[in-house]
Image (cartoon, rainbow over all chains, first blue to last red; front, side):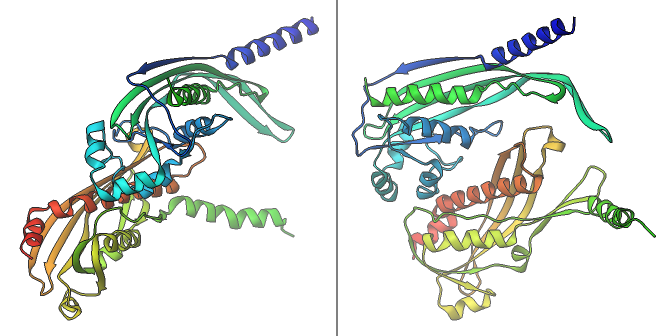
Length: 221
Length: 202
């Protein structure tokens, strides 16, 4: 009887672990023009932060940048903060260009054009989005006593990441495409003496899929 | 003989209770980039009033007790020291407006904070820390006569993060607000009608 109970508990944990690993991710691509990049040209990825209700996380921007820059076919990516500081005050939340026409106007400023050329920026990629936590349920209580400590309970939640990347060609001042990604996954934390977090890597998966797609998009077609 | 642990608890417990009642002090600190803009052919004196240098905002809890003392005067001075030399040909800090005429400057700039607001997630139920600052900027002739007087506002926010303290989040939101001030100030300075007229007639 005890053996059956143990096996059932093990199976339950295993199925939870497997389902927690499952994150569903969809990527949509909309191409408006041909793309391509030379060896000496670079890409900069910037987060949109003009709205007060949310802001694109700097960590996500960095993650996508690392993904685009990785591998044998990795692109040269300018770190976001380095670009923002060098371009200050033109790409701050309140002053950043919202349309390609604004970028064209901005490039008429001598200092801006010089710095942009200095970086060798061919594409600006604007990331916009956030990860939302939904349906948080359950509770875990932990106790510490002279004889030892332990937790008991169950918690779960759903993460939903939604990001879009708009690609601007700095040479032609045109928007050349948009790639969107939606990812969602359920996380669980069963606690039977020790809490075992089974976390769905929703944002990490969104970053990975979006980064790979963006790299292929920029390299050409 | 008293157990050492008992003595320790007797000393530490009141200290812990007292510290829980006191307000936390946050000194805003950060670094600011130099603006990438054209320089105006103006020699400018800048006066940092005591009210700016010593500016401290106190945030009260819902029960009316002092919760945070936010000292942001020095960070504002560091900000202006970073942006003004990039905007003007020469910048001379002076202690009082009267010293400007002796320094042979074209104009005197006197920035001041009029209002400071802080929004904490515990009160707003939002997942962001927000800072909003209202400024009064004055530009005077070397003799102290009126040239321009305008209001600027700046806004900064930072999301809540696990393992980041409230003090650190307040600092980050304030630094974003200061960058916002710097960008707005640098880009809108010549668009203030009185300043635009003054520059055109020089």
